[in-house]
Length: 516
Image (cartoon, rainbow, N blue to C red; front, side):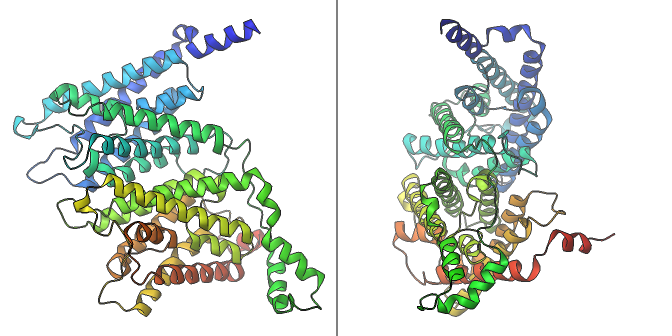
């Protein structure tokens, strides 16, 4: 027993790692990665004759993270962030010694990057040199909360897309990580400057000697990284991929549609009763998988509302439609990528209803999913309200029908944009397709973004009853709220039925349809 403890302690400390060449290569990689993150990311914050564009900054940081992680992940793991490193430490993926050396090199790279940026930039444009400063209208505690949760999103994404037990991640893991950074910037830049990386904040702080509330950018991200790592590692990671086998075949559903009216009859057939048992699927209430799935759905919808609705807050300027569309679309892509292997990644009652009517999930699971999604949305809205100055609350991102658009027209808009989303979900997740090479979650997220670009001026572009429900509860705004339940629910059901029964086919049919 004593020798085991001694071995575990030595492994945790990593005393033997200094003898390995790999650690020195890793340290160089972490230095270079963080150096370029600060040089390019903070460089995008410099205002040349005009105010730095929020979308520009978000993309600069997000794409730089994706690029650097892609370049060095095979060398060091591609952390380039102390919050990621501490998450790896607490879950036993790196040693304590490696953790300290990583932080040292990340901070060193950030300082050198900031120093070089200052040398390249005219004195008249230095200002803060991209330092992270939280808005004067929010408190340090609120800034801490924002940094905690946006770093949670990042580290949660890192652990989810890099889970060695997953075989369903077809797209680029570094791109997913970079997009999580970009979407959090779209939300949090006006609040805290969106650090989510202590080293990124340290570099400009050292060079420009700006230390206002600097503790926020260490404590918030580190605690957020720890929370995300522990939650995913201990609760949501699976020993093996979760199967997505349908509960009901097409033939069983078609049989049910013919016999549905006879279920309550004394002449009800055994096949109808058997179908009803499968349709309800009440036995899975006792399974651990269902409850892990509910946690995943709650978390996914929570962050969708927090980040998406957060991007709708107007800070000193009119709403930026592109910013809002990208925030919702990329957040959906990120969350679906993170939890699709656990729950299917619905984070939307309209998607869950589509899965129900095509027999992919049971009624009990569908109802519990919707409950979890709505709870997550309400919590996300409540937290957003707590983080946001009262003068900026307004509708808090609630979906409101344009005064020039009627209820029936709004219903039609919501029906069709949700049709696009659910149609995309079924098409890119069709198990009989062998031609889908890219990222299914990204395709789903882009369908959300493009529909927002069209529908925001009409209805606010909900396409998700839970997303509308959260702000409605917190802000007590219920005007035309029925539109955001009936439209998306019908649209989701129609898209699911059309694709499942009309357009999907067997693997043989798919192969025959491919161009030679």
